[in-house]
Length: 154
Image 1 (cartoon, rainbow, N blue to C red):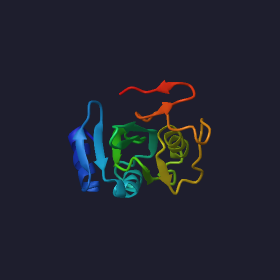
Image 2 (cartoon, helix red, strand yellow; image 1 turned 120 degrees about the vertical axis):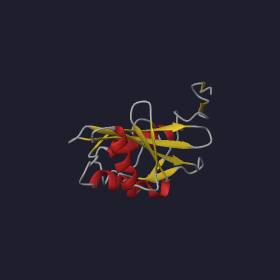
Image 3 (spheres, rainbow, N blue to C red; image 1 turned 60 degrees about the vertical axis):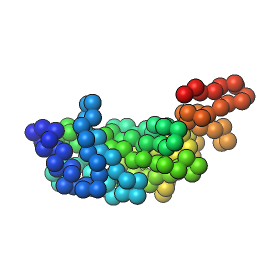
Image 4 (cartoon, helix red, strand yellow; image 1 turned 45 degrees about the horizontal axis):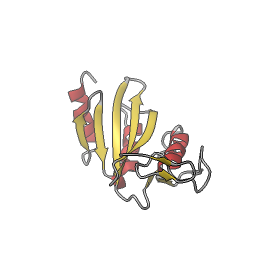
């Protein structure tokens, strides 16, 4: 694509249900949670700009909701986008896995599960990566570790 406006127009046509806006560095795409897997497939498998490289995957805790954040690159064009999916259920946060689309997502998703407690539906091996079962989720803003006296402040 020649510029971000052209990429923005292309993405708006590809995923019309998404909100697309200029971020500080890259275009940001916000998709409804129930459309996330469909969006990932469209981004990965389109002929014009296939976003075939998942650079990173993380989450942000806003106390009332989580935002799962994906950084994607189209290796052939070096286009970069940030895709966000809002997870509103803090009691049972979950989102569909994309490890079937980008293999690198498998460990990124395990890390987010381990540190935030967000479950990835249909993940092939969703288990703790660093911490013991029952420890809690230390990157949540409401995390408290009574044994080690760790408490995150907002």
